[in-house]
Image (cartoon, rainbow, N blue to C red; front, side, top):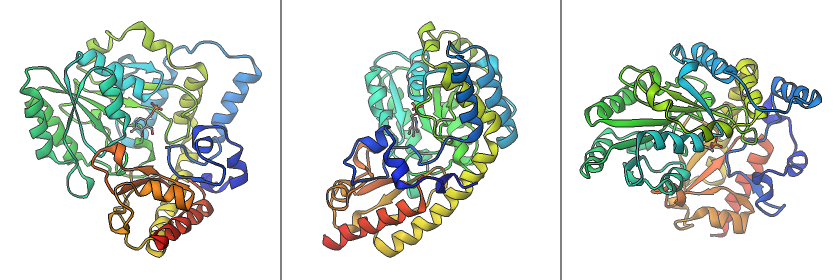
Amino acid sequence: MHPLRELTLEDLRRRTSIKWREHDPDVLPLWVAEMDVRLADPIARAVSQAVAEGDTGYPHGTAYAEAFAAFAAERWSWGGVDPSRTSLVADVMTGIVEALGVVSSPGDPVVVNPPVYPPFFGFVEHAGREVVEAPLGEGGRLDLDALEAAFIHARSGGRPVTYLLCNPQNPTAIVHTTEELRGVAALAQTYDVRVVVDEIHGPLVADGFVPYLSLDGTGNAFALVSASKAWNLAGMKAALLVAGEDAAADLARLPEVVGHGPSHFGVLAHTTAYREGGAWLDALHTDLAANRVLLADLLAKHLPDARWGGGPGTFLAWIDCRELGLGDDPAAAFLEHGRVAVNSGLPFHHGEGHVRLNFGTTPEILAEALERMGRVVGRA
Ligand SMILES: Cc1ncc(COP(=O)(O)O)c(C=O)c1O
């Protein structure tokens, strides 16, 4: 089984999702975090069966939470997921906004670590919270000194502070270590900061992912989990908000409207992914590892002055293009002259001269894209 080698460019061009429709048909899309995979068989079967049987009503029960709990115990030796301390939410970003809603109020500060997934800024600001930046440090790793300084600054206004952590980090694909996360938990305790952690990319880490809530001293935190990145289910709306053992009372204050977000198909698909998608996920890990090696080779060949740390956290590569002579926004040049769509680093903050490239695609598309990008630099 090779999830990343099953589809042709012709197959993919028939897709109607944003990745394949945002740009002109001559553009190779390596931007938004969708992967070029078929649905894993067990998920396709579960959804198709529901359609065939007219099982198209509202979601019910705790199957999603139970499937996630079993997956977390098996893969990450984290036996602490209690389905009674979880809530279904429409998707991870909605869940983040709702978690912020129960631990903070409009005007309160929320600390984030740029460069980070752009909606961390937009959604937080839309919720009326004030973003406080604690930039990542050397090699894109968490900088605990910067985090402490941000906590102190954020507290100085006298308002409750929340920290929105991305584990692993999008866009750098850095997987935070146990030691780093313990450092976060200690700082959060010292400065009385509530942590909300987005672990949507967690299952994409083949080895060494540490769920934040699995560590001591994280009981009043919230985690957002979902099968949507690892099994490519963004169109199947459902995610899980997991409360730490001291956050159950906060979880109980979620407004009723939140539970109306996830769809029955979403819950079915995500539940099946966690329950029966293990073999497919293992095969995906193998293909992603091969693509990581291929991307390093292609960069050396076509863009030798680009720098990539090779973060193992997901299918995203954060590439430093500052030596390429393409200015602050190389993605614009790659699109215009190379007909390759990668994400500009700018909306991630602190991303000048960087691009985010999605290598969750076939080796052929990756090779063609890098060749085109190399030609752009040749021109420059
Ligand atoms: C870190 C991170 N969080 C959240 C999301 C969006 O998740 P959802 O569609 O479940 O809101 C993404 C999508 O790429 C992401 O990378």
